[in-house]
Length: 65
Image 1 (cartoon, rainbow, N blue to C red):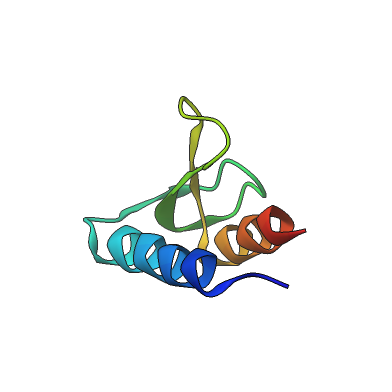
Image 2: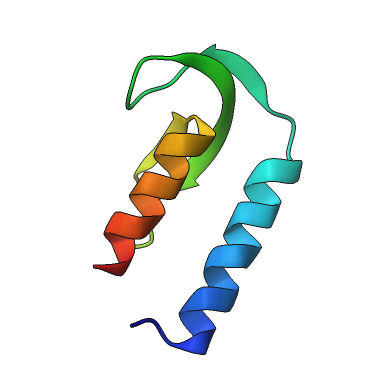
């Protein structure tokens, strides 16, 4: 179960990622061509990936476990 602050921060990160200029390219995770979101790992300050929307949701769900 996540607390309210984590939920708000996750929504804020998703809003920023979806409203930035998005690039149509190959996803770093699944390899599909799609509009990409930039995913920044909160545990790793150097890590960021360009992933499709499905992989973005999958990474967020793994983050909560």
